[in-house]
Length: 246
Image 1 (cartoon, rainbow, N blue to C red):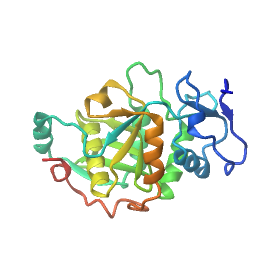
Image 2: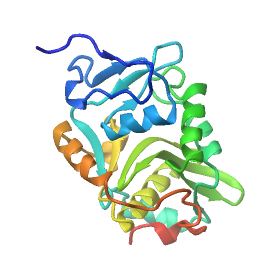
Image 3: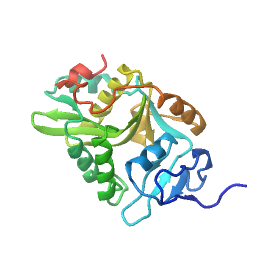
Image 4: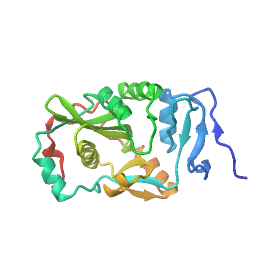
């Protein structure tokens, strides 16, 4: 018998998380409601292919959509003209040196068709704590001392779950996404989660996988080791051109 209401999470963050296959069809992917955003709960959710997404004033909502939007880490598309433009800029790249700045910039970034932000205070605190524990990461793009773009998300083994990105200069978020994909590919992670599709992501090379295919890949990938802890030592501060595809 199919459920017609999302699973209500128990108060214990260690309690079993519902399987993603039990998510609702309408609205697509709604899996569970309630709980909290403590690290244990968040990591349990990601390990089941779920993520939190809700607006201020709503209860916490957990999602696992079908299909799932993903990037092959060797498949982020930047046009040749755009790559040439980026290579000519005096931008530099770091990782995990300015996580707080990146997540706050993502929260403040206006989005077409979106009133306000889903990255509220509770989300900022939760992912900042995940970063402190070595599970959430950011790639930062700099022009001198100014942060011009960035992206953040959660890594479990060789699976990266992208959360949000921003641009303070034209092309900043695209550059951050391309660098993140290059790093993940070099570290043996073939796939990056982008959660739900939008035209911008699809133009950059995102594709959609059926949820069962995504979950099968994810369950293997999270068991394989990748760079652990803070990424700042693993990503040298170098000119952006060093990290761009040829």
